[in-house]
Image 1 (cartoon, rainbow, N blue to C red):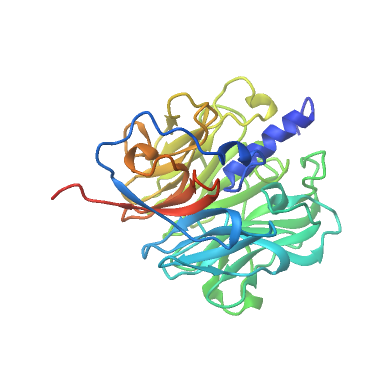
Image 2 (tube, helix red, strand yellow; image 1 turned 180 degrees about the vertical axis):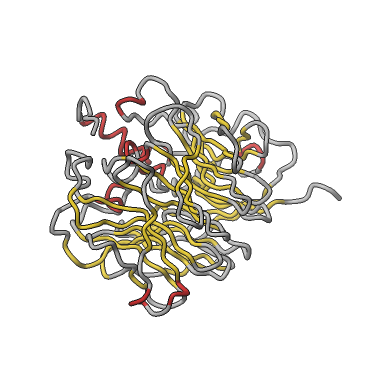
Length: 420
């Protein structure tokens, strides 16, 4: 394991903030972007999207993370007490999906299929004997760390169903396809020497696949998706309808990126793992979505200063299935970092660009330059902060800053026709 050269508070704050944004949660300095800002200097003369804000559970933070063919949105919403709930917005009506017995739950990835089946992560009411932060704590369950075990869940209209691990304590569910296959990662009972030297992670974890068609809860056993050769751990982030899954492979590290993502990988139906080309760095190579054609988007560190110590300096990438290299999508003007979160069958890509004076901004990429999604809507002074998913009809969900209230809300952006 490569040891980190220092563990200062500032370094860990930067890493934690990067993790929160990467995994779809609110950054610790969210207050910096929840104040009304000036209108954009350039606004499209004709809006291409109509933005609809979605209701919350009473807190000041909500986010749409996945949108299906029907335009239903899954994500999360904070309650007034700061705890979080996985939610489903169906025709504009919000439904809390509850928890696995603990204080918080969330849909942190594209965990929704066209049948309305939802997958995500939740606290349980069981204490963690190893006191790990695990992924659910590192990515922003509020109000504080709780030292509770977190597990992946599936929701099919009733109570949340807990997904099993590989013998360890924690699990995480990320994506689901229309065939009822769920991917994520789960702990084994093995201590791993490549884990972080902090309390973040102690047990080895592996990418897993669950098949809802395998029978009762007792028979929904996780199938291991092996790491890339030479790596200790793996985690799956998305799966398409043909069963092609993508994710990360690397050291145990902290469990949610950095050196856990030394390789971006794709698992074929045979179980064979292949490497997805990255942007040249050593860390944070993270696929976030895969479409029906097998094209992949995500984010990756370039070979630039900071990468060697695990700084988050990533840029969005697009990899057409089978290509020898990936495409660096760059950033919006003035920004330092970008992440691609989703791609549809038309190869429209959405994500976030940030790290400049303008604050976080949602983008769309359609085979050319990155476009600020705020330039394609008429909502100023409100700001589209991130675009998390896009369906084949071109509908987009993510988070929007309501400038009048400072609330960050989930939204749907519907394409509109400018022809008479």
